[in-house]
Length: 265
Image (cartoon, rainbow, N blue to C red; front, top):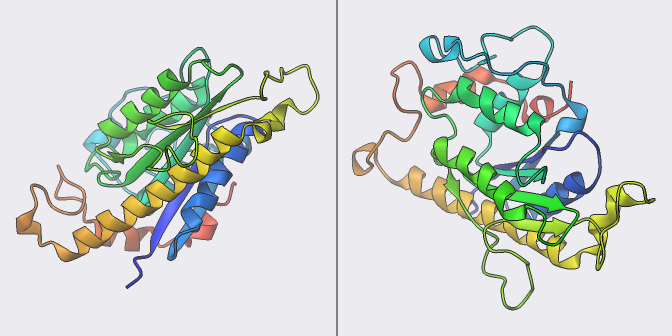
């Protein structure tokens, strides 16, 4: 039998360039398995105008459509991003390394995902992190670790780059890590800096491998949850912590075609 899954690729860079190439390469890895549908979002196409103001309106009155109550219908794309995340089975989050961590726009998205924390709507989704820096040791692990911490707090299942080593060098174990140019970095004042990751075959191998690993694990998790009864589990299959939510009803209530949901507005 084929288990069908949806894998979301999120490129957390404000420009179309190396991070986008990495995430799309990872989605190619996911799509190399049968029964995988991919979605793609890029911060370069989206707007996050406000930071989380910690009013907890989303906590006290949670909802699955337009979950960010403070800023819904005010013209930014946070709700669309969060709704897409709720629909996927696995997620690949890529971000360039800024001072050993994710850029401010990605951290903003992480903060505002509090809107779907009530009920843990990302629980049991599979996640993998990707990053790029100018130098070979330019803050990669700190950036991937920050992505992973966000996933762990949402109770996601986090995977590494897969068992390709030592057959194919992947350059890192906990996430896909690439450099901007090889063997020497291509800096921002040089032509082609926004595509310099294409010189790093090791980093691109890691992207493909982690995409395949996220899709593979998402299939295993989905099949297991289909087979197991709720009484066999420590928690209900769907969102927990509130009787307001039921995952099957939630997906039906969204009622938005995946292609429409993932299309930048």
